[in-house]
Length: 276
Image (cartoon, rainbow, N blue to C red; front, side, top):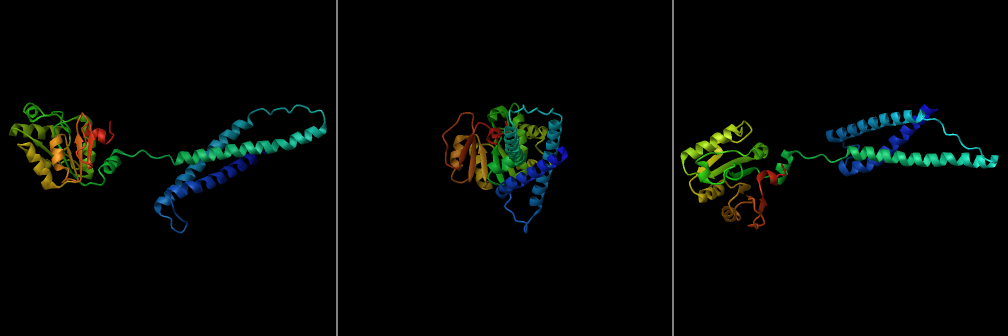
């Protein structure tokens, strides 16, 4: 008897899952049975796994219920009262079971359709609005140092920016550039980038590390390359390029007034992509 009841409960749960799933599937996968693709088949297979998981949960729940002792119904004063009480019990039990079954079905399907957290690569592509060429200043963004004079002493790649930088190089044609005062500064920068592992088969190319002797030279590089995005920490350069470049990111610890509607601001490159 208990086994038959368990099968009935399972059948009802599957029916509720089917009804609730129809609504969910129409939101996520607008398909018809005559036009099923591999993605649709994969979704249906996933739902089947969810149903099997629910079956197991229901089985363990029923096993626990069968081990519980039966409750004794208190004796009534008349047979008429007993008949009325016994006839109402199945109705109440059925109502509670139905509500509980609907809740379980909804919970299983809702858990299955929980949104998946996007990867850093997906965030980078979304933030860059499908831009495929990016130019970026080194000082204060990729390097710890903030001035050409600092580069005459040392060059250090910021560890917190590495993951974002590598994701950009996977998806975009990246050029990095900086103003330097001597050849030794150039060597320090290239060595720092190499030691950080930026120059890989899928990473930055050494030939795309550009150097100039004046700040305006960086603006000339950017205009010649015509990138979809330029990233810089110099407000004047950002302002000069605002009408020539589609999008720009101004990286500065202190928030400045936006130079134009196509200029975005962030304290750091990694914070712009939410990677902190």
